[in-house]
Amino acid sequence: RNTAFVVKYQNNEYLFKTKLIGEFLIYNILAVISLLLQDHFTVEQILSIINSLKPIRGRLDEIKNDKGFRVFIDYAHTPDALENTLMTLGKLRKAKLILVFGCGGDRDKGKRSQMAKIADQYADITIVTDDNPRTEDASLIRAEVTKDIRKYYDIADRELAIAKAIHLAELNDIVVIAGKGHENYQIIGTERKLFSDYEVAAKILL
Image (cartoon, rainbow, N blue to C red; front, side, top):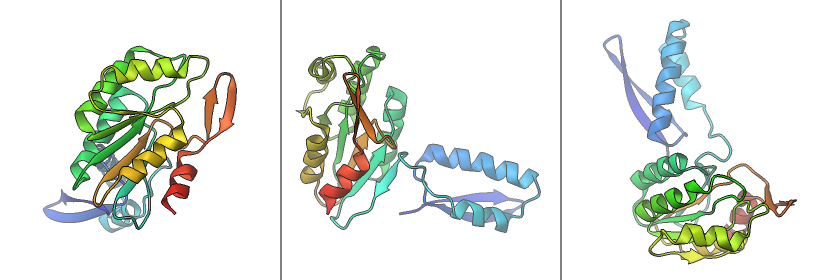
């Protein structure tokens, strides 16, 4: 469950391993390695630093479980971020990719159609749910999203949507719960209610 890559430096090859996931993160790490080398860190010191890096909460953050499938929480809430996340996880999957996502209210409506088309392109099963609807009608937000998805589940309650995704998951599937990441609240109307994708998913996985 590590990401491994080889760096060639001064005619030697060094194997780096990190718990971080994603090709785009490898490019970020390479930039860090370059800066550390310029600051006269040894390769051995850099290896130790890189190997000890931990995922940022809510960014392709995996919830460990023993069910035979993988569950990731990711903050992706823009078209570009969602596409990068699904492309990255698509390279890791051995079976289906199951996506839970929604779009926020009182924000850029144009991205809803874009995110829906990305979901439709990369996910095998898409569950559209509420994110932070704020003062918009949540059902109308979901309707805007689902009109650009061919096969989907429309489940307003985010906890029920996450439960559906996990219950649909089978051996070697990947479930990604996108949009809220580290956030521990959901904004409905003008009220901020306690809600954590982590806590909900972990409870369901017990």
